Amino acid sequence: MAVAGTTLATGRPRRRSTLARREAIAGYIFLLPWIIGFLWFTLGPVLGSLGLSLTDYNAGGKAPNFVGLSNYQQMITGDPLFWQSLKVTTIFSFVSVPLGLLLSLVIALTLNQRVRFLPVWRTIYYLPSLVTGAAVALLWQFMLNEQFGLINSVLTAIHLPAIPWLTDEFWIMPSLILASLWGSTSGMLVFLGGLQGIPTELYEAAMIDGANTVRKFWHVTLPMLSPTIFYNLIFGVINSFQVFVLVFLLTGGIGASVGGPNYASYVYAIYIYQTAFQYGRLAYSAGLGWVLFAVVLVVTLALFRSARLWVFYAGER
Amino acid sequence: MAKTVSTPVERAHTVEGGVTPRRRSTMGSRVGRVLIYVNLIVGAVVLMFPLYWLISASLKPLDEISAFPIIWVPSRLVWENYVNLFQTVPIVTYLQNSLFVAATSMIGTTFSSSLVGYSFARLRFPGRGVLFIMALSTLMVPSWVTLIPQFIMFKTFGWLDSFSPLIVPQLFAQPAALFLMRQFFLTLPIEIEDAAKIDGCGYFRIFWSIALPLVKPAVIAISVFSFLYNWNDFLNPLIYLQSPEHFTLPLGLAALQSQYQTHFELIMGGSVIAALPCILLFFVCQRWFIQGIVVTGVKG
Image 1 (tube, each protein chain N blue to C red):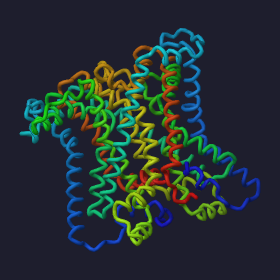
Image 2: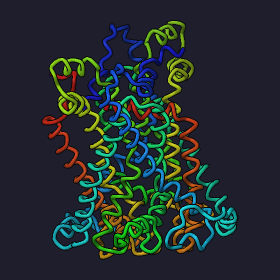
Image 3: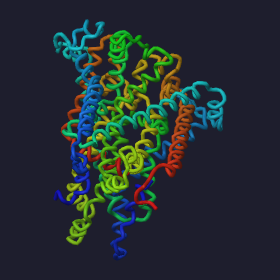
Image 4: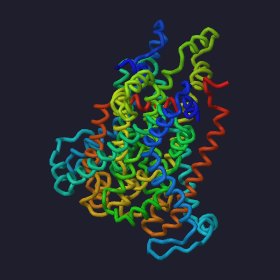
């Protein structure tokens, strides 16, 4: 990412080596909270997860046996739930993330039209993304209730049929996406910042060249905003592959069979959770976690590769 | 003082006010402007409606919640719903637990991330670039990969059903927070710190008494982010907490949902209580919060 390269080298003149050594020692000491946390809660567990996934360790507490890649083999060849959860999660991610970005972008573009009371609008449009986690899932469970939910009431009021949002195999995914879209407007702030950062000279030059509003958008706004879109896309995808609480509470919650009718919204994180904490298959669950890591990594790398084609960095040659 | 942190502050100001020069208002552009406001109002109503629905449902008489056709405005405000809520569930305990976990984690994350961010921004040592890229790349590691080994580890520590698994990992610098701190520290002019160094200040003194007070907006921003994240966290409490007297609010809400499935007035009331502190915190810290989002997001 461009982030890292920007200011790493501060070109200050070299000073006496004892001073430099003192500075380096202080630097490492200041870094300790991250180093310890990284080793203890990230690198260690990531490697531990990999090692664990090569065993048959269960919650029962028996000593683990090394079983090689058989957990992974089972996932790929004999586990329909693995494929189902991967499919459902991919669909969720590929639909909800672009839609969320589009929505945020449209809001940001509208707010960038020199509207009055901008801080008020900005607050209103940001507010939904402050309601997160359990509260948002429970709210939408109520909103989408088949008998007396708000959405169906509106539909019947305009003489449309009521929709079994949460109980139908087909409708559960649109329900999830709808609920996730409601809180996805936070990207709007970042886009707004990005829009304000586009130099006005570019628009003036475009105007002199006779560009109309549409062309200005395609040839100035969009390219200049593409790094911001890219940043939001990357983190949107990473987060959406880990969606859990929304599905967990929207489709039942504690003690219920979660994941929607006939596993129609059985997202990957729910599969990991149930494998580990309801069936006690810790090793297999660790393997599932590693596959998720690999999938996220591949998708992220693919996005980074694609960035060359569509992300424009102003400072780059 | 204020001038030294001008870059991010200025950016936030441009977010507030327009930069493009005002155009002549022709007939067409006037219609366009009206359309913009119409769109904004319609969008705001649609986005705000679920919030209104949430609050109004929590104050409706029981028979009006499931009435059909729906009742848009409650006939009277039933504050007893909240009294009921406090009597049926130990919501005060949940609130206390959530507050404790979120506040301790917030202090730990903010302090450690500031320290690490300062180190990455200002102190020179071999391997700084590589370590910084490593710190950033952990943003791409899903928490689901580390979950099982962490669970086994905390279990062997005897930490199940305690707050330690929720708090201890948060005491160490978090990648997003340290990145934001670094970006802000980089905007400070180096001369102030150099002057302090000549005066014989140690590195920690320079960080603590000179650099940190100058990036107060960033400190507030990451504090708010951290508080909201830990306040809303659901997965870790679900996995680690077992006895109801240790539940945090989101977990308590889930328990409420499974116990009182049809009592939407209680569930919505609980959700209001969970969401309210986040909204209040946002209003109080709005300026810095928005700056933080814009700086991390745009520079990415």
